[in-house]
Image (cartoon, rainbow, N blue to C red; front, side):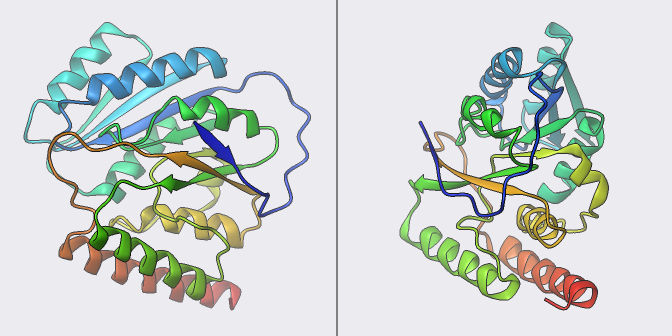
Length: 252
């Protein structure tokens, strides 16, 4: 289920109706239980929305069998590419690797590898491809604990105030973006702040951005480290560095 909300920026005027080329990538780290599920959902979606397709699995130095499973899927399906980091480089580095391998496609979609976001929602998001250059999501149904909800609230409030951003959810991990934007901006964050960095830099450059609501699903294995003390400190560091960079350029 997906909820399309009001337009936050004037939609782009695009009359091209043919299917674009689309790549979907997702980073994995200790996600052996869900790698195949996310890959199969992604392939099924691409078969409907894309003229040319590619699924890219970025193994960020997983200590479990995630990388091995990714290689098995790539050997089985020619439209799947498995890419490996020898060591764990972090979420930001994994996104940069994914973008690097997807850059020649018209649209790049990305999500997390733990199946908390449903790749099937990209079917509905693709209907906005002719209206926006960047489609982000917010979680209208959150299944997190009180501490994580509080951290998420403070984080998004800070970004709205600091960067004058109108968006509800800067860290939701399901997004679709035109590759032209990735070619235009420089991604520098290595922390979970990287998702917000892409939104903010796209916003200040005036790209049309649409926001839709999605449902998230429970993580049925392992633990999420997005709100660990290490990641919170790294995100704060990246946030203020990006603020200085953007303030210097645009005087926001």
